[in-house]
Length: 571
Image (cartoon, rainbow, N blue to C red):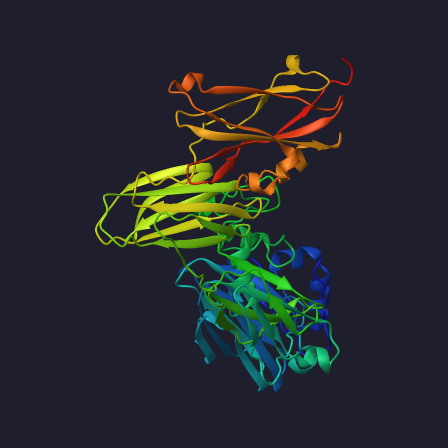
């Protein structure tokens, strides 16, 4: 419920011009007090007392007019108009109060239609006009009594705005005062962070009123008012939530501007009726603006984090009086975050394997520039842990983009004096390790070929107390296979096994006592490229981790997926 403050000082009244049989309050203070106590009068007239901020709506090219009365000469007056999401044209003028008719003395106010007739017959004296989207003020230390007229128009789009007017500007001070230097200082700048500092509002430091600071960050432009920010953050990108009847608007306002009331189904001007208390205009779906608002209490230094490198951001600071919920904008600023540190590009040598380490979600760049003309280029990539993404550009043109898990080989058509840039992007799960080979000689293959399935299969029915039998797939290429075993605890689980799945660790990292045997194997018939092996000399009821390594002609090895087996306890 809106609380009405009716001081004995000159009273300021705001109300929209209407075609309904409303009545402007007369100068009769006793009669006006009676009207204020009359809930029906307040509900219908939308009278707002001196010193209150109102929110209202404008449709494009549809003017709106307010009146307020200053009862006595030499009265201080301050009017503040805050455009929200569109520029406004507004004008303030004054004319003498309408002469009272024979109703005077009887306590009966003049009909509004008669007062309107007297108002519109006179042009009035223009006091101030403005066009733009700044928060603009009209302030006078001594204003004449009269009927003041505020005309507002939006020519750009439907919008909303706020108006505040008072005849006691010195004592009210609802808006926080800005310091002598209202700028925001950028004190620190990083690739993903910006630290800002600002001087405190005297309203907090001197008057001890409750002030909190709210910062707004976006990549488009600075904002001149907090209601402009709220308009952007609102779901329909243009309108605030409709006020309830009896607060900021009367049912007449809702009907005139398309909002449903008791006698309005909401069909006017394309508005939808909702089952909730919110009403929204039918608008085309637009992408939400990347806008963030953070309030941090009474601190006057703040670090914005999680920004993108080499990106320009706009920063606005608002001092908000938490008693009145009214705000004042500091002078906004902008800053560009620093660029990412340029990564060193690793040069690949023809036919030589290069080890690469990539941080989680990180990126590495490799460069290959063959010294002689070539018909084909072969890239071999061995991803030791999780899958990674590889992109290859030849002279700036993308020629390959793939995800790589295990060992993969890519062959590209060559080009005279071509240069190749390889981009490797790591996994989201964790760090990545790779071995990369680039060569212009097709027969220079350091990595062994692998089957599609690198699992080791254990035969449960062939298990004994001292042995297990396993099998794995081979290829048509003759390679050397070595099998290793390691006893593990009974509580050894799949998670521990997964952490040890670095396929790039070769047999040279294993103890000699863990080696079972090595053998050569291949089959021209890929369907028959299967080998089995029985591992003996094991302990009853014990768990073992088995690893198979395939070793290529260049000496580089690749590990199959580890297999956990357990011997029988009783035989």
